[in-house]
Amino acid sequence: MTDSLDRFLARVDLLVDRLEKILPAGSQPVDWSAGVAFRWRKRGGRGFLDPVRHPHAIAFADLKDIDEQKKRLRENTAQFVSGRPANNVLLTGARGTGKSSLVKAALNEFRRKGLRLIEVDKSDLVDLPDIVDLVADRPERFIVFCDDLSFEASDPGYKSLKVALDGTIAGSADNLLIYATSNRRHLMPEFMHENLETRHVGGEIHPGETTEEKISLSERFGLWLSFYPFDQDEYLDIASHWVGALGGKADEGMLAAARLWALERGSRSGRVAWQFAKDYVGRGAAARARK
Image (cartoon, rainbow, N blue to C red; front, top):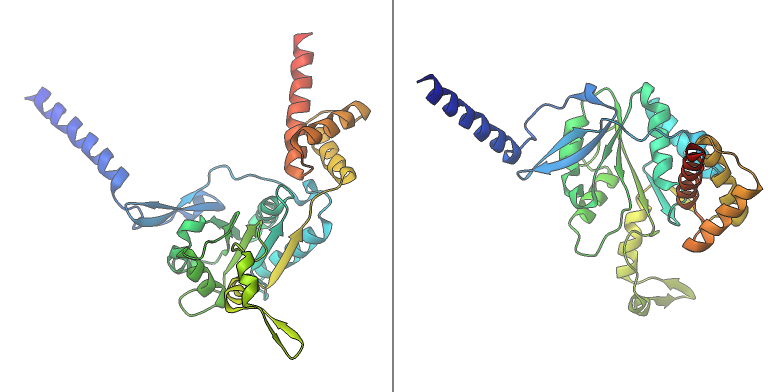
């Protein structure tokens, strides 16, 4: 009898485990003490906030050669966490120049003042009203972070983001801002044939409706920060910083290796500099260990 009961209970436990994986998790209360960063996830058709156990902690001081962008984002975020007016932010430009790292640095600096971050995938932007409802009555200040944001014309998240940025009754909260990064200034693809819609009125150029619609989304962000490719000196400055931060030595040999690394990849960016530094310092440490 005991063996039969044990087998039955074991089957019940297994069934419960399987059900937990497919049942909606959105009805569960959010454990706000579990972290300062969260991801919006979907399960069983329902969304929920999943704490990030070990968020990437990067400091503003680690971000080189983007001083003006750093200053503007820091000021805007400081205004926000202190309860003063602040803007939604769109960070656009070249790949690997520090757009998403800048947002992570803002979280790292202001987390002790009540700043929290919620990362939302582009495909889940339709759930923005649900996220707003979850955080509206919280004392913390929340940044909804959309990384590498771009849309096609048919994407359902496009209208949801417009609603949230417009600040309508269903899409805004006083304690929430949207920070988004994109390689596209207007967040949507632009096609040559759209130029045919351009009209000349009284000597002025008026874009067509399709172009105006695409521009209208990015214009809803109050603060635009543009990022540009680094020149060689800036790239080497960033590489030297990260080599030093990882315990290596920035000398002429390192600079030559960094130039070759960028040449092989056909790119000079902060991301490429960081990847070089990890490789350079890691191989140096391995070489010393073999001696």
